[in-house]
Length: 460
Ligand SMILES: Cc1ncc(COP(=O)(O)O)c(C=O)c1O
Figure 1 (tube, rainbow, N blue to C red):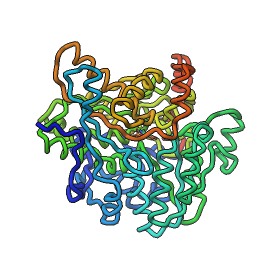
Figure 2: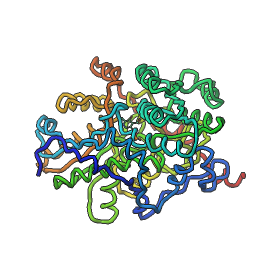
Figure 3: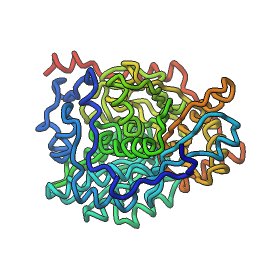
Figure 4: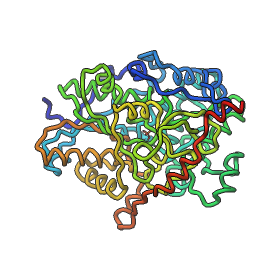
């Protein structure tokens, strides 16, 4: 047993391969379908949108490990290994017998785990000889990470940022511009799909789904340009597996194994990455760790969504994925965790959830900020609102242990820092924060717009 607060691996212990959990899943998620034909997509179909290597990774269900390219390994050394931290102070404050660990991914200038996949995606685009990329960003974390990676690998980048977030966080925009990327609040007048959305919802604060549509449209209509996505996709979960691989190596080094692994879930990339190495043990039957996805009550795709084929974007131009979804037309309320306001969920996580390997809870944002403030005071890291969802549930699990006296080992993902989210903190501290929960009728309106795959197939 260790009494260290921070467990750092050595630089030469940074994993050199990513782990593809699909290779160990007893059943695969249903295939991505073409929105035009309703038939499964191929690498060829994806190539106009994604760079080729990423398209291959997206559809590869059998390769268990992928070599991390050398330039990406070198880039990772700038900010990895990330620390695994024992939350002794939080444990003391809660008077819990539980042991709480967190993997801190906010230890880089971009402030979140998103840099793990950003570096990989920009590298592959560069290697293919592309000259520019487009993307969307919700909270701004992905856009920031990608702008850093794009600057490093010398690639042009346009970021469509969800309008509500862009307005709440002007300095996030300034950081992205500092790294040389163009940033456009979405929905915008720069794309056909943006203009159509604005016509229907002139006052919308936007959503990740809208921003994705705009970024994809821009990519396919610009020569030598591709689109990159910061979450949801299988390739992104693959890159984020480094979080779980490092966590496991660090916990192994102090002879610890988690009873519960907890992560916030927006599109599912950090959670998918954090649980990956432990999920491998579970899938092989050698452990019974609980995996918990935490989502906002305002955007409850796992806990109140449907497991159906849906578009990944609002403009209905992306492939159809079978996932837990609130419907691509669902416009979440203006929650302060912008990175969790996505209508769907990673197909891999959706499948693991549907098959009973992953649990899900939804939490109210005032309770999330209560947890964020307690955590900040005890652990001295100001968490991102998204990450604070995982903190909330980790605290709740630790308090259950206090009642039962169980000494459970809890691991959660602290995905990022919240220094650009001070408007949200101020609103919470002023007692002005509210909890918006969508009604069943609002959710039904989203479900009513789900695509009919049979109709698409028969109309081709
Ligand atoms: C700090 C942080 N954590 C978590 C998320 C949620 O994304 P994902 O579910 O892909 O990890 C985001 C998304 O923007 C984020 O910025």
